[in-house]
Amino acid sequence: MNKTENALDNRFRRWLFQGVKEIEGPHEKEGAHHKHPWWKVMCLTGVDYFSTLGYQPGIAFVAANVLSPIATLIVVLLTLFGALPIYNRVAAESPKGEGSIAMLEALFSRWKSKLFVLVLLGFVATDFVITITLSAADATAHVLENPFVITHLPFLDHPVLITLGLVALLGAVFIKGFKEAIGIAVFLVAIYLALNLVIVGFGIYEIFNHPELLANWKTALFTHKTASGGLEARSLLMVVGLSLIVFPKLALGLSGFETGVAVMPLVKGPGRIANTKKLLMSAALIMSFMLISSSFITSLLISEKEFCPQVDCGNTEKANEIPEFCACTQDEIAGGVIKEKGKANGRALAFIAHEKHGEIFGTFYDISTILILWFAGASAMAGLLNIVPRYLPRYGMAPEWARAT
Figure 1 (cartoon, helix red, strand yellow):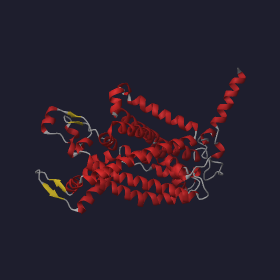
Figure 2 (cartoon, rainbow, N blue to C red):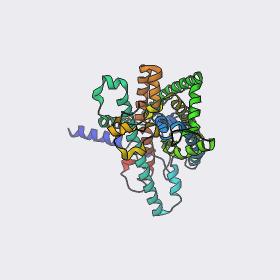
Figure 3 (tube, helix red, strand yellow):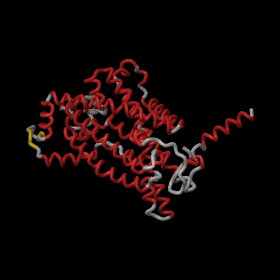
Figure 4 (spheres, rainbow, N blue to C red):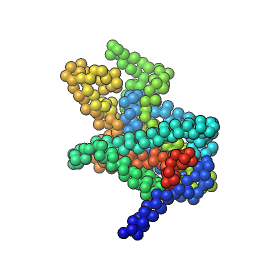
């Protein structure tokens, strides 16, 4: 019995300390990391980025209404000409995956440096944990809002349990290893982007065949209702100005850029910095195209009422928080009516998938969305596993096994 316990203990210790000698950082020698082509690593670090297509177009329309394609374009320009050049520089300065934290650490000395890094690690860890839990919660929402689940699987209506189960399953994948995580990420990203291309392609084809859709959008874009109920023209300058005001409300996760730099040691090839820049550029260009095109087709093809959140007309205190196109009538306010949220709220592309491509394609798209939203936490998990072990053990603030991956 003792021999059996000792054997199990030894196996557990070997597993727990596996990878301790492989962690590299600014003060550690580079070990024998398992390398992968840059495009595979892009799928792992970009899975959080790409998964935002599951809810981004809907959030954008609620925040900006018909201005959402213009506001989305501003977000894209900020990403391509702001975030991307910054992280290209970070990649060049930290080829061993230290990331921007190490660059900031070098600006201070001794205890100031340590305290500053610990504060940054606190923010980073909080951001990554929020990403993991919110992504799992978004996946759960897509599960519960799928028409097939509503009709045939009502017993799944336990969002907290499903969310916890998804988070636990994500942790189990990373216990297995990075190789398995990257393999899953490549598969999910390929399927999800392919399905989104089908939806976007169909949407553009639909708009091309119905030019009145574009004409109606342009009319709504360059006119607005006055207080008296009439219409007043908007100038192009006003459209751009209003878009600049509302674009910060558009949700978009950029933590994938930091993660992309943090996992540089996983990138195969002698030109690690160049390959990492390819990784960052490819993720940014793919997402830029998908964001603009998805925002454009959803704004033109979906009725604005379908984007509305659930509205309690009796709660007049929150009336200002409700989008104008979702506002309650006087009769609804007097009756305290609760208006159910629209079918496209938070799932605009899924709505098009169901409405335009049928329930089979729509359910298949829902499954891919659920899986990629669940695995979006993998990007955050990869960041945690690569950033935190580079600092806490060096500061003497973590046990030896915390350096393992």
